[in-house]
Picture (tube, one colour):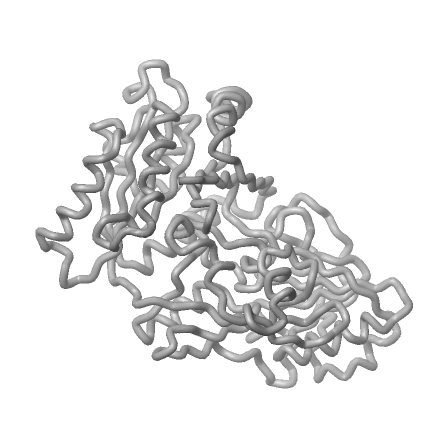
Length: 425
């Protein structure tokens, strides 16, 4: 099974800039129904991002759109101008290198517009609209995934593929890929989209899908914001489970670790009873990471000691796997046997099995709980260097030797996540 491994060095997703032009003197003539804000709080927020690595000059104004037409009107005016003036689409601000910022221009604040200070007109973006029979949901491009989940759960449904962190905008993650532990099975989030509304660089509002404006559809999905602004997405849904059995096991041998990951994702075409619903993992280069990051998973009374699991005190690898289920099957013999049968085929360190059961929503929103802990300690509003890499199966062993065991060694670092992904997904 051809595989790729995505390595993630933080908890965020990119939201990137669309560079456009607009005469600054035309700002007051746009007629966008009081959606433009020059409030200092709005302007300051739009000049920052999660990375906190780029000290950008503040924009001249922040737009709080209430519709696709608002965005199209601004971009069309920008395109028709002969002056250097930029427009940037911003979701929840989780870019790293200032991709969602623009100096001396207009930031389109796609997320948070439902309560922004630019809402003098009382107009707000549309709420998610769920189609239970068709199993999809139409959502505003700035909608946060956590709010998409809350809306769809009212109908017993949920999107198929996620990111690890749900406080990100739909348009932001779809402009990248949207990868988490479900991607081996359903593909990334961009593989679970039926239709988009996109404002192009000329200010045209296009509806696109596999059948309609397909070239734009595929360009925008994963297009890093370079082909247009996503204002609506139609997301595929499936019946939502109620609970999750979340399991972590440890490895000291990288080859065995990746072999087990590759085996588990090779089962993606098997029935649900014969595969896990989530496969991910991370690298542990110091004891602090496993005992502090997402520390609620491990018992504080029994801290994990790298030296006790690896006599050489080297790098450890954690495989994260999860099985979705319903309350009615929580204690059934079949459900427990499914998990045990899959675990028996893995070659982890026997004494390193950590298991917890929790509600489905709590599992999906697990990183937000870690965020709240970091915020309480003043460790969230700090610079966040970040890197995503796709590494082919043929080179991952070299990467382990050169980076995990070489450059990093036993040095303290942030989270290093490893997502095994089927290439054909």
